[in-house]
Length: 471
Image 1 (cartoon, rainbow, N blue to C red):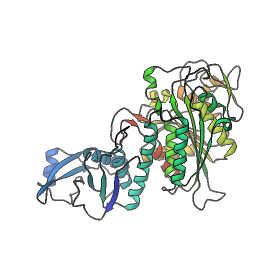
Image 2: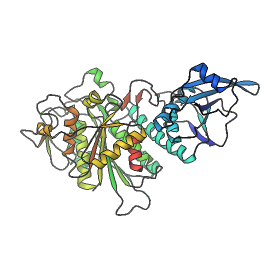
Image 3: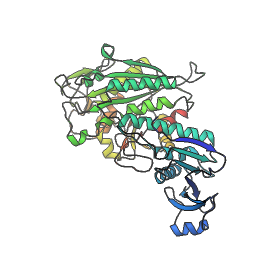
Image 4: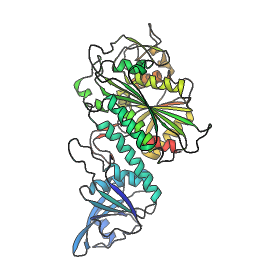
């Protein structure tokens, strides 16, 4: 289990908890006896009640001394409570137990998410421990607590998959993890390998330089009482388990984080794991295109022409623009074989998206206004925020090839509008179906522990897609 903290709900304050967290604010009085009036404490700490503020106060507990954490909740919106929960978890790190009194207002699930996600740890070769072993939420709604717990654990699953080193995380290993997820959560699963990948020219071309052969994964969720009219959503994730750039080699610094280049695929797998618990009412198919972009005598070359699923030919001008090649196969397959109502892909696709939006926002491209609006709204609700980017037709001609149907990058090799060019390329493979492309190259990884994020993979996109699908 990615997060090992145990959560429970209590009707009253846990008397034996080593640490108790209590919300404070202008109109909130803590349900515990403090050594001095709460107003004097708040004045002493110059507290404003903002989310992220946490103050530790010693209190009498029997013959010993206990600890109370006074935590700010701000306006009790979901973002404020996530931040508050993360601050509590970081302050309580190393304690075996924590009792949290929830605020009277606001979405408790957000508080739970923040607390658990800040408790996440990942270690190789050591016993992994969470920031707090057991947390008791007092006054919480059971359903809201479980919803927050499911979302946090799914996000942590994505983090685990992304943080796993590439010497372990081969395409075969990633496909095996999908099989485990399917078995654990009642999903149908299919994995293509070897000769079965014959039509998937993009996946084969990207993976042909590696000693670890590629895979294509399909996970299927069907809700109870689904009928012929039940909407069908396809999620497609980039599953590049390591990206050297191929013969268009990345510099060493740019390669160090490339075990995380399958973050989009990890998001899809994690979302699929939580659909039943979220009681998502639509059919969902998750596709993960898995390959390792390596260097060898068999690696694809710049100027090679490949054939994507469905027959479109592509002149590969840059082997480091490989994510769009594997995703194009997945999208073309979904369009031709799965008859979805909506198609969404998610990927750490371009450094250009990170340059444009930094590390706090994902880039969203869409052909359908309703889908775009729903995804943006889900991002605001969940905390995984996206910014709508334009599909500029002015740049479409830059993908025309002299020898094939398309080039995989701007044929001028200018490097301009790289994120837009990548989105325009993917659009070529979705037919006329409503489609959205989510580029998470910036927010998929964190350089430091910060709030609900821990250094390494963030799981960005999991909670947004769950919110979107549940709605």
